[in-house]
Length: 138
Image (cartoon, rainbow, N blue to C red; front, side, top):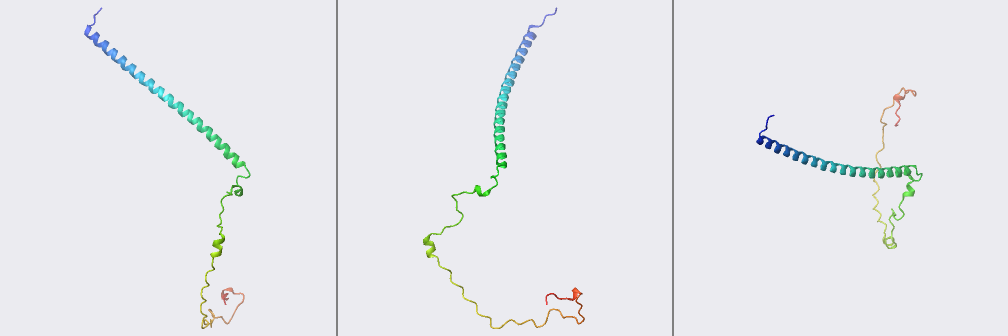
């Protein structure tokens, strides 16, 4: 058998211990990260379940509202306390005065000149069936 130099054996033991320590540290960090991921995953799953239940309730409410015959009746949705018209008080009605009538314009002095000639001169040979010759404005 061959003997191993004690310095090499010592160096090998140091390297082995150092690598086992690094391996244990890496395993511990990996376990910590894995635990953190599991916690976050559980929280997300619970949040997702809660949101799914909420959406199911909303969908159920929307379906019920869609099937309700009174849902589209705007008269039933009116607000009783709000009146859209303005109510005058007695004091405001008493102080209201009609606006003064505007002065009448003076009467025209001369009548506008009457149209003396028609727009289109009539042809002497008038054909009643020929509509292109008729002036419908005269």
